[in-house]
Image (cartoon, rainbow, N blue to C red; front, side, top):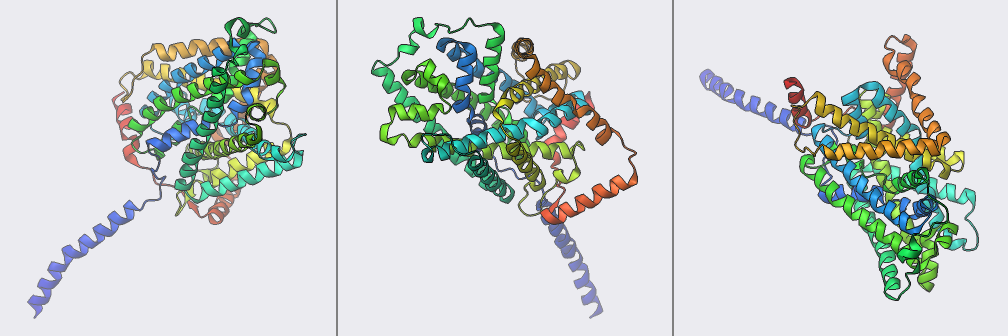
Length: 511
């Protein structure tokens, strides 16, 4: 009897150990981490959805105004897409070489160190993304309310209120589920392409009917003012606002399925498609509107619809509203990941690096993006800030691609699944330097204020990040706020997936 009992116990030990191992494996498989739910289609939708927001409905006026002629403005649109293609190829290399979420910020921090990375983060969180979100939200509310106020501008408070409701709703969606957010992005990206497709088809029909006077070369290159290099640079800055967002997939690299394959594929599909759509859309505008009419219009697509669609002109403001709605969702999704990445590096409060225990969404970072955007909306007119945003955008692009060149020189043995020809980043940097130089010359106040906004982050960095021996009461306050935020949002620190960064670590060890 004793021997039988002993045998039974001996046999049960491995079984007990196996049960423990199974539980351990099950526990590790249920780690709280960012979910990989972005496939190739959703990756393309993020790029296209973030680029096609309000820009194509706002920027044509600014590009034409600075370019001075129809022909030159169309050249600016085509070249703007070409420059984005060069930049996106560089970002494809950086995205698979440094496989971290956070885009420009993560790459610059990894290459140049904390201060440079923090300055990009500071300007993005403080002004760039909240302002862009506010502009897109206001465009959304203006187009939604336009049918109700056909003979006048929608009331100030009505546009702000509707914009705020839209931002709050999409913040709730992004907090609830990554899958919901990506599905909204997929659906509304298709809606955007259909809306622009309608404009393009109607415009091509007009051209086939012989309505292309403004596009005849002899007329298209009649300048209403002698174009200067500085004005052309400002035209490119205006176009860059419409193209901004081409690098946003790099902000969510850790949530992309097989990023080494899908990141570059999505970039190579999306950028040429958007460039083609933008160019054809502008050609369609000029098929039915004179340059003077386009410059006089505050809602180009609505004016286009009123002239050509007759009783179906209501389709256009609804289509634009759907387009901008998807743009708001995309910007919230990606900009929140920037806050998340900054907090994970210790450059923002650690609470922003936490994700929901069940939904695995960065709720604190999403709430910060939402609140910052609403504050910008309440301040007043935001359209004047587009030039500041465009300047800071271009500055961050140039610094990031300069980092690619520096990394090639400093760490030639670093593992690079994609390696672009050196002429691509060099060509981009030459264009970037010329554009920024002439922008500084033409608009020193605008560019100077953009630099001031960025440099205000220097004292913040040294006080908040570098100063390690702060008074104990500061740490107690931060700890208390973090604890309250965790209880309120039901969030914890995510566990990292070592497989994503092991190649980078191994390459560092070799260097």
